[in-house]
Length: 227
Ligand SMILES: [Zn+2]
Image 1 (tube, helix red, strand yellow):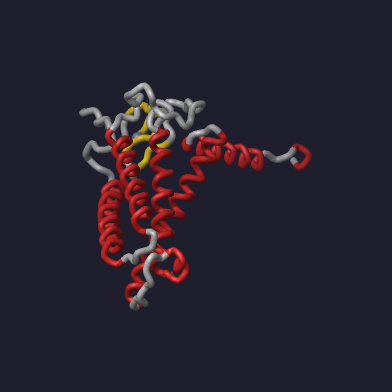
Image 2 (tube, rainbow, N blue to C red):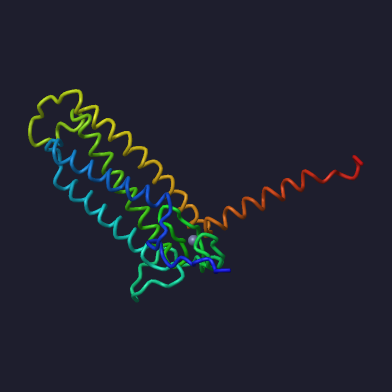
């Protein structure tokens, strides 16, 4: 019987459904966003904002590639690796998707199609932070385009009144950006909390399950005086 194939990194085939969805959505969304911004955005403080947004996007892509292309079982190369979570070691556990034991596993990420371990957790945190930062800028750009009156003092040129379609388009982009900002913000807050309590995602889930079972067992025990 052939042995199940171990996954070395996130870019190895077969890709997960979530990974394919993410890549397609990211490419579509970024092209749509940049085209819309370049073609229709007013003169708001666009050059610096646009530059910061692009920088956040490039950082996000580089962290995504860094995590996806590397083996979570291998320490990152280089001697000057930026360490955010110095004290966390985590348990080595078997990942049923990667088919291997992963050192200090935090969780298996289906969007990256690889495990987040003690070796790539810092890169994962930076990916989440840059994602939140990029989404915050995107929300700001969308608000400034949907409701330019709010930013009138910052405008270097007087704005011509825009047609309703333009406003609706930016309001739609604002809604999507805000939802993405909130979901990535929630993920960031969750991982900041995990860093604070010095636990991994699996550790916390297992602890919650254990506490729940203990509570249920305690409720199941009938006190002697009632027997
Ligand atoms: Zn895995």
